[in-house]
Amino acid sequence: MNAKRVAIYARVSTDGQSCDNQLQELRSVADRNGWVVVDEYVDQGISGSKGREQRPSFDRMIKASVRKDFDIVMAWSVDRLGRSLQHLIGFLGEIHAKGVDLYLHQQGLDTSTPAGKAMFQMLGVFSEFERAMIRDRVKSGLARAKGQGRIGGRPPVSAKIITTIHDKRASGLSLRKIAKQVGVGLSTVQRTLKVAQ
Image (cartoon, rainbow, N blue to C red; front, side, top):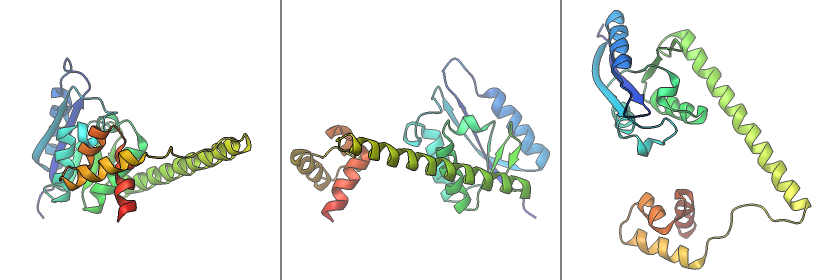
């Protein structure tokens, strides 16, 4: 049987810190398991609260997982991957869809094992529960606001902004660049363009 190919992901929040300890320990774990390290992805001095687009190595690693460049992603701990349970579940779902497993050293989570898969599924259940709770709170808040005579929901987008978004898209700009230049959220750009389709 071929040895499993692994990618190591390491991250530290400040430039004064080093990823060396994380990398050294994860290389040792890979060696003990007979896994072959095919790539290492390091984000130096970047907070875990930053999104994928602000963590270049993390983004490259996800793209490589889609290409099936490796079988397992190894990280020191869950907080190296991100600070949000929702983002972690999204990341796990994305790599699992491609048949890539996850090993978290500090948490002892290895989704290539039956116990690790069960833990992953439990995380998914908790994440779904969290989303349901948020949905209920939003509905309750909107109902309370309506009862007080206020109107909830998203503020309307002006006709000028809608026109600007369409013009910039027609000129070939990406959705992210449009959002940044116009000063609105990415979801506003997506919604505006979707309505026009």
